[in-house]
Image (tube, rainbow, N blue to C red; front, side, top):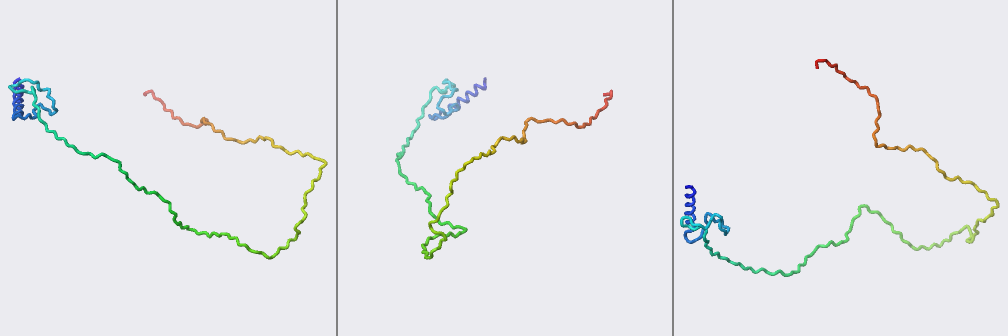
Length: 177
């Protein structure tokens, strides 16, 4: 109990020294948030007042006024490169000669002898009437069965039994085990 009284007196002396000079300084219990702490009860300890009233400080405020220009539309012309196809010569590795046929009028004075006269008789087949008709039977297609082996796949495994000789070792039991 004596320690508590000594500490509270020391605290009161420290708070009184902070208030001296007429300026309100940050004390032990002031957290700088502008609110009273929960430790100040507004009571009187040894002639000192803790939080019963608060002195207001005069804070100097300076207002800075800047002129902000108002945006306005500006036309900007941007030149965009566009590909233009320009013909250019291309060299060919293998040069193939190409002949262009030219029609030249030529006059032939020589007459050619033809072994026939121009109007000649043409033989035309003559239709002969048939008196007796004979029918012949023509073989027609018919289905024939041909055996063709077709592989059939079975999905089940097929087990084949085969006798394999197996050697079995038999141990003799003794009655001690």
